[in-house]
Structures are given as C-alpha cells and as structure tokens.
Image (spheres, one colour):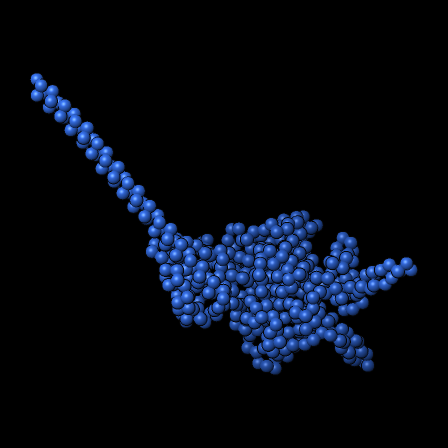
Length: 454
C-alpha cells in the first residue's frame, strides 16, 4: 500500500517536473526569439539608416556638382557618387538609365532607397515665374507632361504641370461664363493623372488652392540658370549665342510713301521687329524646317504684330523690360523668357510720377499714366476696380496681357518681386518641340517627390 502511494507521489512529482521543464524550455525559446527579433530589428534599422545616408549623400553630391546629361549617360557620375558616398555610409550606390529619367539607388542589405533624376517635364510648365501670377478670365491651358504614370486604354497618363510660381497664384474667372482648365489634348490620346488637372469654375476666385499641376510658393527658383546653364551675371555671353538682338530705346521714322512719314517708338514696334528679324534669319541664314530662331530684346516690348509659324518657332528673351500685349493673336508658335538684371522696378514704363510741394511746403505726389509707348495699357487698367493709379500695382508689373492670345510655347518670367497679370483669354500651351529644344537643354534635377524606400 505504501509502495503504491510512493509510486503515485513519484508520478505526480515527475509530472510536475516535466511541466516545469517544458515551461522552462518554452521561456528559454521565447527569450531567444525575442533576442533574435531584437537583433533583426537593430540590423534593419542600421541598414535603412545606411541606405538613407547613402542616398542623402548622393543627392548632396548631385546638387553640388550639377552634372550634365552627358555625365549621367556615360557613367562618370556613377563613379563620382560611389567614390564619395559608398564607403562613408556603408551603402552601395548605383546610377541607372541611359537617358532621362535616370534613377539613383542606394542599398544596404535588404534596405533600398531610390530617387529619380529627370530633365524637361520635371520643371517644365506652361507658365513659370519666380514671382506671383494673377489670371482673370476663363482660359484653357495645355500643361507640360511630367512623369508618365501609365495608360487608360488607348490614352497615356502623365503627371501634368501648368503653372509654377515662386510666389502666389490667383485664378479669378470673375464674371466670365467660361472656366479655367488645364488639361492635355484628348485628340493626342493623352490625359493628366487624377489630381493633376486644375479646373476653376466660372464666377470663382481661388488663391493657392489648386490641384498638383499648379504649384505656388516654390523656393529657390533659379530660372535663368535652369534655362541657359549660366548664372544671370553671364547674360552677355548668353546673348552672344542668339541669332539676333536689338534694343528698343529710341524711335524709328517710317516712310509711308508720298513723302509721308510716321515716327514710332521702338517699344511699340517690338513685335513687328521680332517678326521681321525672324523672317530674314529663316530666309538668309538657311534655318532648316523646325529649327528654332532665337531673338534677344533689351528693353520694354509691345508684342503687337509678332508672328511665328510652326515651321521655325521663335524663342524670345526680353531683358530689363516689361512685356505687354492687347488684342487678338492666334497660333503664335514660340516661347518667351523675361528677366531683370539691372532694373529693379518698372514704374516708369507705366506711370509718370512727379513730386512737388504745396504752398505750405508739404510734399505732393502726382500720378498719371505715362505719355510713352505703354500709355495704352495704363489707360486700359487705370480704373479703381482694376489696377487703378496705385503705384504699388504697377511698380513690379513685368508682364501684362489683355485680350485673346492663343499660343504654343511656354512663358517664363524671372522676376522675383514681380506680379504678372493676365486679363482675358490667354491660352498658352507647353510644346516640347519649342520648350525642350536642343539649343536650351534642361538641367537634370532630382525629383523630390520621387524619393522612396523599399
């Protein structure tokens, strides 16, 4: 009997010991799993940190060196980033692609970070300004095609960009029954990605509230260098490569026949002068069909009378002058680039301001529309409901369009303090054949939105 009790006790004790042993093993395995999990987590964090550091280093080297498309294509920049960043960050750097867009990949173990480098569409837009832009009226814009994101049946889909501004963007359709819209031509079997095609309904005013095809308050816009691959201080060097250049100061006497003569300002004749010079360049210098004609203007420019067909589009640069147009112009094929270097403001192009004193010796300021070649534009907009006679509304007004202007080609206003104004049906359309011409290759740049980890 006692032996049976002892055996039973032994079985119970053995069972308890077995349970304790199994529990101890379970706890030990759990502890080992936790340790392994912690080690894997630490390794993952370390690898991600290395890969991120490698990509950050490569981007810093890219922005410092500003490589050309050639150095990206021939592999030399791949060597540069590998030498500068690989060893320091314990990561592997690879530059892929034989043409735009290229990709930079930084990897460490299983962690991978990538960024896209592109030219053209990345910073291209129908209208670009380092300042502000105000649009009044209904307009249909053709934006630039950015990143290709796929297709929907027979249509290619792109991330589009219509406007890029360093300052604010205002779109006010006002009393117009027309709406503002930015979209690619469906006849070309293309469309903008959802969220990249702004529409502003009639009788609506919007300020900095658009889809992703209208960018505002963009920092560090260096438009001259982006366009010409030179700092703005080298403008004379850039001008020397143009087909023709002229200055709009002074007047020209026009012989109308029968001894009748008319004296006109060269500012007023600017558009016609561009047309005549373009025509002579095409006819006399043997420009091939499709070859861009480049014309540089110093000073104010009224674009009335400008003509440019699609056989030889024109690229116009205006330095230190306002650009204005009023009227109707259809099918203008060309781009316009405007910048200031020596001229801080444009008040004297639009207004005449005189300072006097009254009988008590107090200062008196008199403001009137200019009597010069831009008088027409001041007369159009000097009502209080428009620009009025407030000097601040005119002082930094570099670009003023009024009427109907149907164009193929982009507009760039490189004036940081400027506010460009458009009244009426202004319908610019980005054109790759004009705006991405071999004469003005775009500088490769990192697409900030393309930086991803995997």
